[in-house]
Image: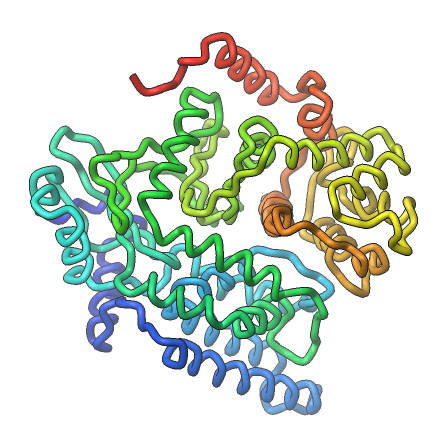
Length: 497
Protein backbone atom coordinates (compact mmCIF):
# COMPACT_ATOMS: atom_id res chain seq x y z
CA UNK A 1 0.00 0.00 0.00
CA UNK A 2 1.34 3.38 -0.96
CA UNK A 3 1.50 6.65 0.90
CA UNK A 4 -1.34 9.03 0.07
CA UNK A 5 -0.41 12.50 -1.22
CA UNK A 6 -0.34 15.72 0.82
CA UNK A 7 -3.96 16.67 0.04
CA UNK A 8 -5.16 13.94 2.39
CA UNK A 9 -3.29 15.17 5.45
CA UNK A 10 -3.75 18.07 7.84
CA UNK A 11 -0.86 20.50 7.52
CA UNK A 12 2.49 20.07 5.80
CA UNK A 13 3.33 16.34 5.48
CA UNK A 14 7.00 17.23 6.01
CA UNK A 15 6.12 18.49 9.49
CA UNK A 16 4.31 15.25 10.27
CA UNK A 17 7.24 13.20 9.04
CA UNK A 18 9.58 15.24 11.24
CA UNK A 19 7.34 14.64 14.25
CA UNK A 20 7.24 10.91 13.52
CA UNK A 21 11.05 10.72 13.22
CA UNK A 22 11.38 12.61 16.49
CA UNK A 23 9.02 10.18 18.19
CA UNK A 24 10.87 7.15 16.86
CA UNK A 25 14.22 8.69 17.81
CA UNK A 26 13.06 8.70 21.41
CA UNK A 27 12.28 5.01 21.14
CA UNK A 28 8.52 5.59 21.39
CA UNK A 29 6.07 3.80 19.13
CA UNK A 30 2.82 5.17 20.53
CA UNK A 31 1.85 1.97 22.28
CA UNK A 32 0.00 2.81 25.50
CA UNK A 33 1.70 1.81 28.71
CA UNK A 34 -0.40 -0.32 31.03
CA UNK A 35 -0.46 -0.95 34.75
CA UNK A 36 -1.81 1.33 37.43
CA UNK A 37 1.52 2.28 38.98
CA UNK A 38 3.35 2.82 35.70
CA UNK A 39 0.59 5.11 34.36
CA UNK A 40 -0.06 7.21 37.43
CA UNK A 41 3.44 7.59 38.88
CA UNK A 42 4.59 10.36 36.49
CA UNK A 43 1.26 12.18 36.88
CA UNK A 44 1.38 12.04 40.66
CA UNK A 45 4.94 13.34 40.60
CA UNK A 46 4.04 16.22 38.31
CA UNK A 47 1.00 17.07 40.43
CA UNK A 48 3.11 17.25 43.57
CA UNK A 49 5.68 19.45 41.87
CA UNK A 50 3.05 21.72 40.33
CA UNK A 51 1.18 22.26 43.58
CA UNK A 52 4.40 22.85 45.50
CA UNK A 53 5.78 25.28 42.94
CA UNK A 54 2.46 27.08 42.72
CA UNK A 55 2.40 27.58 46.47
CA UNK A 56 5.94 28.93 46.37
CA UNK A 57 5.12 31.25 43.48
CA UNK A 58 2.04 32.56 45.27
CA UNK A 59 4.09 33.11 48.46
CA UNK A 60 6.79 35.04 46.66
CA UNK A 61 4.28 37.16 44.76
CA UNK A 62 5.93 39.85 42.66
CA UNK A 63 9.35 39.00 44.06
CA UNK A 64 9.27 35.50 42.56
CA UNK A 65 12.19 34.50 40.38
CA UNK A 66 9.71 33.30 37.77
CA UNK A 67 6.64 35.40 36.83
CA UNK A 68 3.31 33.70 37.50
CA UNK A 69 2.37 33.55 33.82
CA UNK A 70 5.63 31.79 32.97
CA UNK A 71 5.08 29.28 35.76
CA UNK A 72 1.56 28.48 34.54
CA UNK A 73 2.72 28.23 30.92
CA UNK A 74 5.44 25.76 31.91
CA UNK A 75 3.07 23.71 34.08
CA UNK A 76 0.39 23.64 31.37
CA UNK A 77 2.92 22.32 28.86
CA UNK A 78 3.99 19.60 31.28
CA UNK A 79 0.42 18.44 31.78
CA UNK A 80 -0.36 18.56 28.06
CA UNK A 81 2.66 16.40 27.24
CA UNK A 82 2.06 13.88 30.00
CA UNK A 83 -1.69 13.59 29.42
CA UNK A 84 -1.07 13.21 25.68
CA UNK A 85 1.23 10.25 26.25
CA UNK A 86 -1.09 8.72 28.87
CA UNK A 87 -3.99 8.55 26.37
CA UNK A 88 -7.30 7.05 27.57
CA UNK A 89 -9.27 8.59 30.42
CA UNK A 90 -6.46 10.82 31.60
CA UNK A 91 -6.10 12.47 28.21
CA UNK A 92 -9.86 12.89 27.86
CA UNK A 93 -9.95 15.02 31.00
CA UNK A 94 -7.36 17.30 29.46
CA UNK A 95 -9.38 17.56 26.25
CA UNK A 96 -12.47 18.63 28.18
CA UNK A 97 -10.56 21.25 30.15
CA UNK A 98 -9.12 22.72 26.94
CA UNK A 99 -12.31 24.58 26.05
CA UNK A 100 -14.45 24.71 29.20
CA UNK A 101 -14.86 28.12 30.82
CA UNK A 102 -14.83 27.83 34.63
CA UNK A 103 -14.24 31.36 35.88
CA UNK A 104 -14.52 30.78 39.62
CA UNK A 105 -11.99 27.95 39.58
CA UNK A 106 -9.41 29.32 37.15
CA UNK A 107 -8.40 33.01 37.27
CA UNK A 108 -9.32 34.66 33.99
CA UNK A 109 -5.75 35.78 33.22
CA UNK A 110 -4.45 32.20 33.29
CA UNK A 111 -7.28 30.39 31.47
CA UNK A 112 -5.90 30.99 27.93
CA UNK A 113 -2.55 29.50 28.94
CA UNK A 114 -4.04 26.14 29.96
CA UNK A 115 -6.60 26.10 27.14
CA UNK A 116 -3.91 26.69 24.50
CA UNK A 117 -1.63 23.95 25.83
CA UNK A 118 -4.37 21.41 26.46
CA UNK A 119 -6.09 22.29 23.18
CA UNK A 120 -3.44 20.38 21.29
CA UNK A 121 -4.75 17.17 22.89
CA UNK A 122 -7.79 17.40 20.61
CA UNK A 123 -5.82 16.69 17.44
CA UNK A 124 -2.08 16.67 18.07
CA UNK A 125 -1.50 13.91 20.62
CA UNK A 126 1.73 11.92 20.19
CA UNK A 127 1.00 9.30 17.48
CA UNK A 128 2.08 5.71 17.20
CA UNK A 129 4.73 4.92 14.62
CA UNK A 130 3.81 4.03 11.02
CA UNK A 131 5.14 0.51 11.62
CA UNK A 132 2.83 -0.01 14.58
CA UNK A 133 -0.13 1.52 12.74
CA UNK A 134 0.39 -0.91 9.85
CA UNK A 135 0.56 -3.82 12.29
CA UNK A 136 -2.75 -2.80 13.88
CA UNK A 137 -4.52 -2.45 10.51
CA UNK A 138 -3.24 -5.71 9.07
CA UNK A 139 -3.77 -7.57 12.34
CA UNK A 140 -7.43 -6.52 12.42
CA UNK A 141 -8.37 -6.72 8.73
CA UNK A 142 -5.96 -9.39 7.49
CA UNK A 143 -5.97 -9.77 3.72
CA UNK A 144 -8.78 -7.21 3.41
CA UNK A 145 -6.27 -4.44 4.20
CA UNK A 146 -4.34 -5.10 0.98
CA UNK A 147 -7.42 -6.00 -1.04
CA UNK A 148 -9.65 -3.02 -0.14
CA UNK A 149 -7.24 -0.06 0.15
CA UNK A 150 -5.66 1.42 -2.98
CA UNK A 151 -3.75 4.03 -0.98
CA UNK A 152 -3.04 4.56 2.71
CA UNK A 153 -1.23 7.43 4.43
CA UNK A 154 0.67 5.90 7.34
CA UNK A 155 1.20 9.31 8.96
CA UNK A 156 -2.00 10.20 10.86
CA UNK A 157 -3.72 13.55 10.36
CA UNK A 158 -5.27 13.36 13.86
CA UNK A 159 -4.29 11.57 17.05
CA UNK A 160 -6.48 11.58 20.14
CA UNK A 161 -7.19 9.74 23.37
CA UNK A 162 -8.23 6.28 22.09
CA UNK A 163 -6.81 6.11 18.59
CA UNK A 164 -5.45 8.01 15.62
CA UNK A 165 -6.93 8.72 12.18
CA UNK A 166 -5.37 8.07 8.76
CA UNK A 167 -6.49 9.15 5.30
CA UNK A 168 -6.88 6.43 2.68
CA UNK A 169 -8.57 5.61 -0.60
CA UNK A 170 -10.54 2.48 -1.40
CA UNK A 171 -10.22 0.50 -4.62
CA UNK A 172 -13.55 1.94 -5.79
CA UNK A 173 -12.17 5.48 -5.47
CA UNK A 174 -13.86 6.58 -2.25
CA UNK A 175 -11.78 8.72 0.10
CA UNK A 176 -12.05 7.41 3.66
CA UNK A 177 -10.78 8.09 7.15
CA UNK A 178 -9.50 5.07 9.09
CA UNK A 179 -9.31 5.23 12.87
CA UNK A 180 -6.84 2.81 14.45
CA UNK A 181 -6.92 2.12 18.17
CA UNK A 182 -3.69 2.35 20.14
CA UNK A 183 -2.42 -1.07 21.26
CA UNK A 184 -2.86 -1.41 25.00
CA UNK A 185 -5.29 1.49 25.39
CA UNK A 186 -8.15 -0.76 26.54
CA UNK A 187 -5.96 -2.23 29.28
CA UNK A 188 -4.82 1.26 30.26
CA UNK A 189 -8.41 2.45 30.58
CA UNK A 190 -9.25 -0.49 32.80
CA UNK A 191 -6.31 0.55 34.99
CA UNK A 192 -7.64 4.12 35.03
CA UNK A 193 -11.06 2.87 36.10
CA UNK A 194 -9.45 1.34 39.17
CA UNK A 195 -8.03 4.75 40.04
CA UNK A 196 -11.25 6.65 40.71
CA UNK A 197 -9.54 8.84 43.31
CA UNK A 198 -6.75 9.73 40.90
CA UNK A 199 -9.23 10.66 38.18
CA UNK A 200 -11.18 12.85 40.58
CA UNK A 201 -7.98 14.51 41.75
CA UNK A 202 -6.79 15.07 38.19
CA UNK A 203 -10.10 16.59 37.16
CA UNK A 204 -10.06 18.94 40.14
CA UNK A 205 -6.50 19.99 39.32
CA UNK A 206 -7.06 20.54 35.62
CA UNK A 207 -10.46 22.24 35.89
CA UNK A 208 -9.77 23.83 39.24
CA UNK A 209 -6.42 25.21 38.16
CA UNK A 210 -3.09 23.58 38.91
CA UNK A 211 -2.40 25.85 41.87
CA UNK A 212 -3.61 26.25 45.49
CA UNK A 213 -6.96 27.82 44.57
CA UNK A 214 -9.24 24.82 45.16
CA UNK A 215 -12.78 23.99 44.16
CA UNK A 216 -15.14 21.81 46.20
CA UNK A 217 -17.09 20.40 43.24
CA UNK A 218 -18.04 16.71 43.22
CA UNK A 219 -15.36 15.64 40.77
CA UNK A 220 -15.72 11.96 41.73
CA UNK A 221 -19.11 11.60 40.07
CA UNK A 222 -17.93 13.47 36.98
CA UNK A 223 -14.79 11.33 36.73
CA UNK A 224 -16.84 8.15 37.07
CA UNK A 225 -19.20 9.17 34.28
CA UNK A 226 -16.30 10.13 32.00
CA UNK A 227 -14.59 6.79 32.64
CA UNK A 228 -17.72 4.77 31.85
CA UNK A 229 -18.32 6.57 28.58
CA UNK A 230 -14.67 6.24 27.54
CA UNK A 231 -14.66 2.52 28.29
CA UNK A 232 -17.45 2.18 25.73
CA UNK A 233 -15.30 4.06 23.21
CA UNK A 234 -12.80 1.20 23.20
CA UNK A 235 -15.26 -0.92 21.21
CA UNK A 236 -15.14 0.46 17.68
CA UNK A 237 -17.91 -1.93 16.61
CA UNK A 238 -20.19 -0.21 19.12
CA UNK A 239 -19.08 3.19 17.84
CA UNK A 240 -19.67 2.15 14.22
CA UNK A 241 -23.21 1.08 15.13
CA UNK A 242 -23.87 4.38 16.93
CA UNK A 243 -22.54 6.40 14.02
CA UNK A 244 -24.52 4.41 11.46
CA UNK A 245 -27.70 5.12 13.44
CA UNK A 246 -27.01 8.86 13.57
CA UNK A 247 -26.05 8.89 9.87
CA UNK A 248 -29.32 7.22 8.97
CA UNK A 249 -31.41 9.66 11.02
CA UNK A 250 -29.63 12.73 9.58
CA UNK A 251 -29.04 11.56 6.01
CA UNK A 252 -30.00 14.44 3.72
CA UNK A 253 -30.27 16.99 6.56
CA UNK A 254 -29.71 20.56 5.29
CA UNK A 255 -26.85 21.46 7.67
CA UNK A 256 -26.05 18.45 9.90
CA UNK A 257 -23.81 15.80 8.37
CA UNK A 258 -22.70 12.48 9.86
CA UNK A 259 -20.11 10.56 7.78
CA UNK A 260 -21.22 7.19 6.44
CA UNK A 261 -19.58 4.13 7.98
CA UNK A 262 -17.93 1.45 5.82
CA UNK A 263 -19.20 -1.46 7.92
CA UNK A 264 -17.21 -4.23 6.23
CA UNK A 265 -13.97 -2.43 7.15
CA UNK A 266 -14.77 -1.97 10.84
CA UNK A 267 -13.60 -4.19 13.70
CA UNK A 268 -13.20 -3.77 17.42
CA UNK A 269 -10.04 -1.70 16.85
CA UNK A 270 -10.52 -0.29 13.33
CA UNK A 271 -13.25 2.11 12.19
CA UNK A 272 -13.50 3.14 8.52
CA UNK A 273 -15.77 5.97 7.45
CA UNK A 274 -16.30 8.57 4.76
CA UNK A 275 -13.50 11.17 4.77
CA UNK A 276 -14.71 14.67 5.62
CA UNK A 277 -12.70 17.76 4.81
CA UNK A 278 -13.37 21.31 5.96
CA UNK A 279 -12.30 23.91 8.49
CA UNK A 280 -10.87 22.93 11.84
CA UNK A 281 -11.97 24.40 15.17
CA UNK A 282 -9.05 26.84 15.19
CA UNK A 283 -9.94 28.01 11.69
CA UNK A 284 -13.62 28.32 12.59
CA UNK A 285 -12.82 30.71 15.43
CA UNK A 286 -11.51 33.31 12.97
CA UNK A 287 -14.31 33.00 10.41
CA UNK A 288 -16.83 35.75 9.68
CA UNK A 289 -19.66 36.31 12.14
CA UNK A 290 -22.40 34.96 9.89
CA UNK A 291 -20.70 31.60 9.49
CA UNK A 292 -19.97 31.32 13.21
CA UNK A 293 -23.64 31.97 13.96
CA UNK A 294 -24.73 29.24 11.56
CA UNK A 295 -22.23 26.72 12.88
CA UNK A 296 -23.29 27.38 16.47
CA UNK A 297 -26.95 26.87 15.56
CA UNK A 298 -26.14 23.61 13.76
CA UNK A 299 -24.26 22.33 16.83
CA UNK A 300 -27.03 23.43 19.21
CA UNK A 301 -29.71 21.72 17.14
CA UNK A 302 -27.66 18.54 16.80
CA UNK A 303 -26.83 18.24 20.51
CA UNK A 304 -30.24 19.10 21.96
CA UNK A 305 -32.40 18.19 18.98
CA UNK A 306 -31.02 14.65 18.89
CA UNK A 307 -32.10 14.11 22.47
CA UNK A 308 -35.56 15.62 22.10
CA UNK A 309 -36.33 13.76 18.87
CA UNK A 310 -34.22 10.60 19.04
CA UNK A 311 -33.59 10.24 22.81
CA UNK A 312 -29.91 10.03 21.86
CA UNK A 313 -27.00 12.19 23.06
CA UNK A 314 -23.56 12.26 21.56
CA UNK A 315 -21.98 12.54 25.00
CA UNK A 316 -18.57 13.79 23.83
CA UNK A 317 -19.32 17.27 22.44
CA UNK A 318 -15.90 18.85 22.12
CA UNK A 319 -14.77 20.92 19.10
CA UNK A 320 -12.19 18.39 17.95
CA UNK A 321 -15.17 16.29 16.86
CA UNK A 322 -16.54 18.94 14.49
CA UNK A 323 -15.62 19.83 10.90
CA UNK A 324 -16.93 23.21 9.72
CA UNK A 325 -18.05 23.94 6.15
CA UNK A 326 -18.39 27.19 4.23
CA UNK A 327 -22.12 26.66 3.59
CA UNK A 328 -22.83 26.86 7.34
CA UNK A 329 -23.11 23.12 7.81
CA UNK A 330 -21.17 21.02 10.32
CA UNK A 331 -19.94 17.43 10.11
CA UNK A 332 -20.04 15.52 13.40
CA UNK A 333 -17.42 12.89 14.18
CA UNK A 334 -16.74 10.37 16.94
CA UNK A 335 -19.74 8.45 18.25
CA UNK A 336 -17.97 6.19 20.69
CA UNK A 337 -19.68 7.89 23.63
CA UNK A 338 -23.45 7.91 23.12
CA UNK A 339 -26.02 8.18 25.90
CA UNK A 340 -29.50 6.75 25.39
CA UNK A 341 -32.39 7.92 27.54
CA UNK A 342 -35.90 6.59 27.92
CA UNK A 343 -38.67 8.83 26.54
CA UNK A 344 -40.00 9.51 30.05
CA UNK A 345 -36.56 10.67 31.19
CA UNK A 346 -36.31 13.12 28.31
CA UNK A 347 -39.86 14.34 28.98
CA UNK A 348 -38.98 15.14 32.60
CA UNK A 349 -36.17 17.46 31.50
CA UNK A 350 -38.35 19.00 28.78
CA UNK A 351 -41.05 19.69 31.38
CA UNK A 352 -38.59 21.58 33.60
CA UNK A 353 -37.56 23.83 30.74
CA UNK A 354 -41.14 24.26 29.57
CA UNK A 355 -42.20 25.51 33.01
CA UNK A 356 -39.19 27.83 33.13
CA UNK A 357 -40.03 29.18 29.68
CA UNK A 358 -43.50 30.03 30.99
CA UNK A 359 -42.06 31.71 34.07
CA UNK A 360 -43.90 29.29 36.38
CA UNK A 361 -41.86 29.14 39.61
CA UNK A 362 -43.95 26.48 41.35
CA UNK A 363 -44.26 24.45 38.17
CA UNK A 364 -40.47 24.45 37.73
CA UNK A 365 -40.00 23.32 41.33
CA UNK A 366 -42.59 20.52 41.02
CA UNK A 367 -41.07 19.27 37.76
CA UNK A 368 -37.59 19.27 39.32
CA UNK A 369 -38.83 17.29 42.33
CA UNK A 370 -40.64 14.80 40.07
CA UNK A 371 -37.41 14.32 38.10
CA UNK A 372 -35.63 13.45 41.35
CA UNK A 373 -33.26 16.43 41.26
CA UNK A 374 -34.55 17.76 44.61
CA UNK A 375 -36.83 16.34 47.29
CA UNK A 376 -39.92 18.18 48.42
CA UNK A 377 -38.57 18.05 51.99
CA UNK A 378 -35.27 19.77 51.12
CA UNK A 379 -34.72 23.25 52.64
CA UNK A 380 -34.68 24.74 49.15
CA UNK A 381 -37.37 27.22 48.13
CA UNK A 382 -39.20 27.08 44.78
CA UNK A 383 -37.65 30.49 44.02
CA UNK A 384 -34.13 29.07 44.52
CA UNK A 385 -34.88 26.15 42.21
CA UNK A 386 -36.29 28.47 39.56
CA UNK A 387 -33.25 30.76 39.83
CA UNK A 388 -30.96 27.73 39.48
CA UNK A 389 -32.42 26.98 36.04
CA UNK A 390 -33.20 30.51 34.91
CA UNK A 391 -30.75 33.12 36.19
CA UNK A 392 -27.57 33.83 34.18
CA UNK A 393 -28.47 31.11 31.66
CA UNK A 394 -28.46 33.49 28.70
CA UNK A 395 -27.75 30.79 26.14
CA UNK A 396 -31.14 29.33 26.97
CA UNK A 397 -33.39 32.25 27.89
CA UNK A 398 -32.01 35.30 26.04
CA UNK A 399 -34.70 36.84 23.86
CA UNK A 400 -34.05 38.14 20.37
CA UNK A 401 -30.47 38.04 19.14
CA UNK A 402 -27.81 37.55 21.80
CA UNK A 403 -24.08 37.14 21.12
CA UNK A 404 -22.53 34.75 23.62
CA UNK A 405 -19.09 35.29 25.17
CA UNK A 406 -16.94 33.15 27.49
CA UNK A 407 -17.76 35.56 30.35
CA UNK A 408 -21.50 34.96 29.88
CA UNK A 409 -21.01 31.21 29.99
CA UNK A 410 -18.70 31.48 32.99
CA UNK A 411 -21.47 33.23 34.95
CA UNK A 412 -23.95 30.51 34.04
CA UNK A 413 -21.54 27.73 35.00
CA UNK A 414 -20.76 29.47 38.27
CA UNK A 415 -24.44 29.59 39.19
CA UNK A 416 -25.12 26.02 38.16
CA UNK A 417 -21.99 24.31 39.47
CA UNK A 418 -20.05 26.46 41.93
CA UNK A 419 -20.57 25.44 45.58
CA UNK A 420 -19.93 29.06 46.58
CA UNK A 421 -21.93 30.69 43.79
CA UNK A 422 -25.40 32.30 43.74
CA UNK A 423 -27.14 28.90 43.73
CA UNK A 424 -25.00 27.38 46.49
CA UNK A 425 -27.96 26.33 48.64
CA UNK A 426 -29.83 24.70 45.77
CA UNK A 427 -26.65 22.93 44.68
CA UNK A 428 -25.99 21.70 48.21
CA UNK A 429 -29.20 19.63 48.18
CA UNK A 430 -29.18 18.70 44.50
CA UNK A 431 -29.46 14.91 44.06
CA UNK A 432 -29.13 14.57 40.30
CA UNK A 433 -30.05 11.00 39.27
CA UNK A 434 -27.13 9.08 37.81
CA UNK A 435 -28.88 8.92 34.44
CA UNK A 436 -28.61 12.70 34.18
CA UNK A 437 -25.05 13.25 35.40
CA UNK A 438 -23.65 13.36 31.86
CA UNK A 439 -25.99 16.27 31.06
CA UNK A 440 -23.75 18.63 33.02
CA UNK A 441 -20.79 17.66 30.85
CA UNK A 442 -22.80 18.18 27.67
CA UNK A 443 -24.21 21.49 28.87
CA UNK A 444 -20.80 22.93 29.82
CA UNK A 445 -19.22 21.72 26.59
CA UNK A 446 -21.96 23.04 24.31
CA UNK A 447 -22.13 26.42 26.04
CA UNK A 448 -18.34 26.77 25.94
CA UNK A 449 -18.16 25.92 22.23
CA UNK A 450 -20.85 28.49 21.36
CA UNK A 451 -19.19 31.09 23.58
CA UNK A 452 -15.74 30.62 22.04
CA UNK A 453 -17.36 31.02 18.62
CA UNK A 454 -18.93 34.24 19.98
CA UNK A 455 -22.06 33.28 18.09
CA UNK A 456 -25.33 35.18 18.19
CA UNK A 457 -28.90 33.92 17.87
CA UNK A 458 -32.39 33.91 19.34
CA UNK A 459 -31.53 31.11 21.75
CA UNK A 460 -34.85 31.18 23.59
CA UNK A 461 -36.71 30.38 20.38
CA UNK A 462 -34.81 27.07 20.22
CA UNK A 463 -36.11 26.13 23.68
CA UNK A 464 -39.65 26.97 22.57
CA UNK A 465 -39.22 24.64 19.59
CA UNK A 466 -37.82 21.77 21.65
CA UNK A 467 -40.27 22.00 24.56
CA UNK A 468 -43.52 23.35 23.11
CA UNK A 469 -43.26 22.56 19.40
CA UNK A 470 -43.22 26.27 18.56
CA UNK A 471 -42.69 27.36 14.96
CA UNK A 472 -39.01 27.99 14.11
CA UNK A 473 -37.87 31.60 14.00
CA UNK A 474 -34.56 31.18 12.18
CA UNK A 475 -34.11 30.22 8.55
CA UNK A 476 -32.08 27.17 9.55
CA UNK A 477 -34.83 26.13 11.94
CA UNK A 478 -37.41 26.32 9.16
CA UNK A 479 -35.26 24.19 6.88
CA UNK A 480 -34.78 21.63 9.63
CA UNK A 481 -38.53 21.52 10.40
CA UNK A 482 -39.24 20.82 6.72
CA UNK A 483 -36.65 18.04 6.70
CA UNK A 484 -38.12 16.20 9.70
CA UNK A 485 -41.69 16.67 8.48
CA UNK A 486 -40.72 15.09 5.15
CA UNK A 487 -38.91 12.30 7.00
CA UNK A 488 -41.99 11.62 9.13
CA UNK A 489 -44.18 11.51 6.01
CA UNK A 490 -41.86 8.96 4.36
CA UNK A 491 -40.36 6.81 7.17
CA UNK A 492 -38.01 4.97 4.80
CA UNK A 493 -36.42 8.20 3.58
CA UNK A 494 -32.68 8.21 4.18
CA UNK A 495 -32.55 4.54 5.16
CA UNK A 496 -30.13 2.17 3.54
CA UNK A 497 -31.69 -0.12 1.00
